Length: 90
Image (cartoon, rainbow, N blue to C red; front, side, top):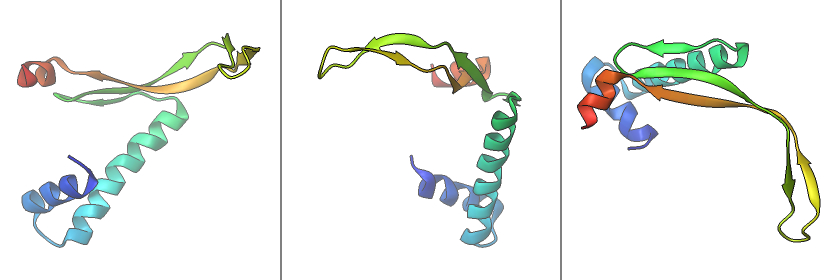
């Protein structure tokens, strides 16, 4: 399922125009991204939790040259599925 499919599902449920459905989808995604940028967690009951995890700097190798490089620390988005979602899938 891709963005267009999700927009169509939103349109089927809410009615209105497809442009309204796309704006609703964009607002949902933008709200999650903005909260994660601030370092907040986003919990969607019955679906899961979006959060930001910190990954420490580490050593790695350039596969082309074999040279040791330092991979910088980074913040990475993560998703933890809720029990209800896990149960629905199984």
